[in-house]
Length: 145
Image 1 (cartoon, rainbow, N blue to C red):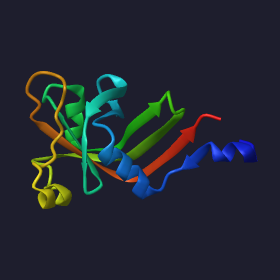
Image 2: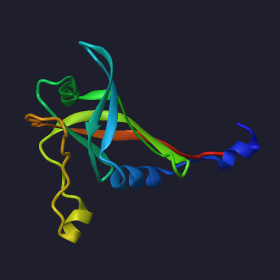
Image 3: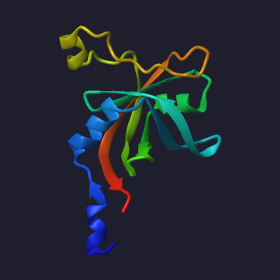
């Protein structure tokens, strides 16, 4: 990257990454190695509460294997605006575990809004709730030059 290119790509702070995940979209992608199936990169609906990413899935899905606890899972979200020529990308890596519920989001409680929970677009029962706790989160914002 040349010095003049740096104004077109900007690293995001950790706080900015979590703000974008929590306020802009509900669809991301999980990347992981599955014992039966190899590398996986799958779309998921998600919510972020207190810097933990939550997804809901069916108990017979390959994503449900993450409920057993995995230490090397990546989660990513990208957004672009073709008209404005801008975009951003956030990637979090960390470990997963099964949980019983999404904790109450203090912002939801204070505002009287219903609690956050992932709402899958896919039909069927989605009873397995998985929490991904990021150990690392990075992001970049880009604008067309």
